[in-house]
Amino acid sequence: MNKPLSEKEKLLTMLADVYDQLEELESVLEASFSDLRIRLNNEEHGKLTEPVQSLSALEKKFVHTTQYGEIPDFSINQVPKSLKLELGYSLPLK
Image 1 (tube, helix red, strand yellow):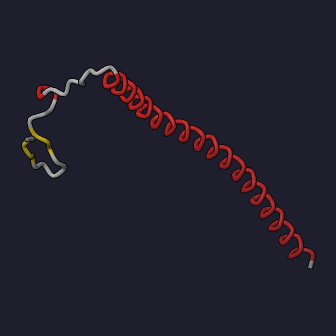
Image 2: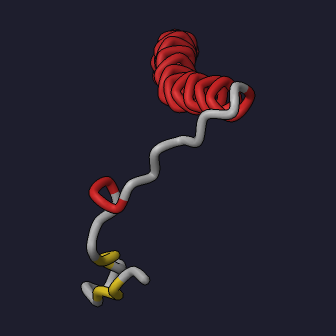
Image 3: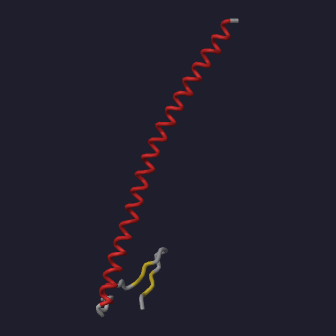
């Protein structure tokens, strides 16, 4: 009768060890994913702020030039001869 009880105790001990290891793994994974989430958020923030700053600078330049009566130079040399669409078709600009 003692033998089955000791095997049950061994099994319970092993299961308790597995449970402890899983809890430890959970905390490690949570910390790892938290760091990864923070890093990805910072990268995305950087990717979003750069174009916003560029657009803001262009907007200020445009407002400055139109404010002083200067006409922005949108010469034909700066515009491509045709627009390439996503499927590879091109349309001439008029």
